[in-house]
Image 1 (cartoon, rainbow, N blue to C red):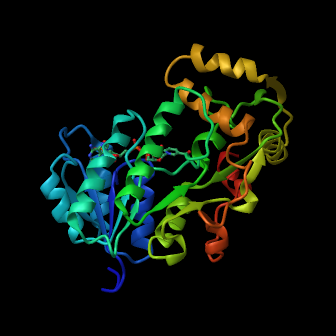
Image 2: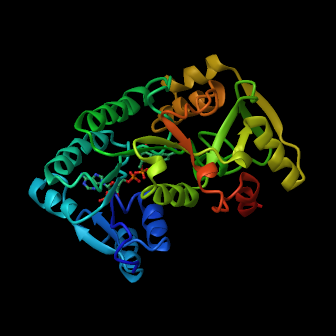
Length: 316
Ligand SMILES: NC(=O)c1ccc[n+]([C@@H]2O[C@H](COP(=O)([O-])OP(=O)(O)OC[C@H]3O[C@@H](n4cnc5c(N)ncnc54)[C@H](OP(=O)(O)O)[C@@H]3O)[C@@H](O)[C@H]2O)c1
């Protein structure tokens, strides 16, 4: 399970959507890998039981515990090198829980070898303009960044833009459960570019960055060049693959704004994200400032990332 010189990686939130990919990538890249999971309280939680068993089968050290057990957390952190924290944003209280890790890392005192990856994995929250209800959730990520910097904890903030699965599997249709076969709604004029990254690639880039000095105290932006598409380009790609023509209906920005308040839960959050990406261009509208950030596909050209083009093939 990896050489003694390879960093030991802990993933907190290992059973979550992003966490399970990080575990997989960490194992694949030869790191001694530790997964923190909350104790399983119901024998009915079959998915989690199976996932944890698969971690164990792949040589992951599974640690059961709670973030509110400060001494336990600190002692565990002392034995490790790199911490990924991937608590979810729903409910957003999970993001606030990160302050527990910050104080445990600080007190554990071995931050010289540490790298901390807080729960980001989306927009670059510092420069982001986004509407409610996403605004107050992502503001917590900004506060966590500030706390990490204030405590002098070595970090990498991952800005992985749009995960492929959610938006591509429904062709950007927020309330759909799959890819439409007849009519498709285009957000705004459909010409703003958005960046998509496959979840496995997000994890691979992040784990590769964990020991890389070039990403120390930097934002790791993920902008694989073949994965930058406008909504119109994405729809055209699908039409080409499927050899169909979809009827396109443009949804004006004012209408998207109405959806933010009028559509049922949990869609307002996703409309706010889509509005920021597909209409306001929040993933693509800036160049990376090299004093604060680096780009993953440039740092790791050896990673053969999944292109949007290839990703869509699974839906044919
Ligand atoms: N860019 C994108 O498109 C995109 C998409 C999704 C998520 N994200 C971001 O990725 C990050 C991770 O989100 P996610 O969707 O992977 O989260 P998620 O699926 O909700 O998973 C959260 C994980 O945190 C664990 N957890 C929650 N509270 C905990 C606590 N108090 N103590 C210990 N473990 C706890 C959960 O464990 P249990 O199994 O015990 O519940 C679960 O493993 C977030 O910052 C989110 O905003 C980005």
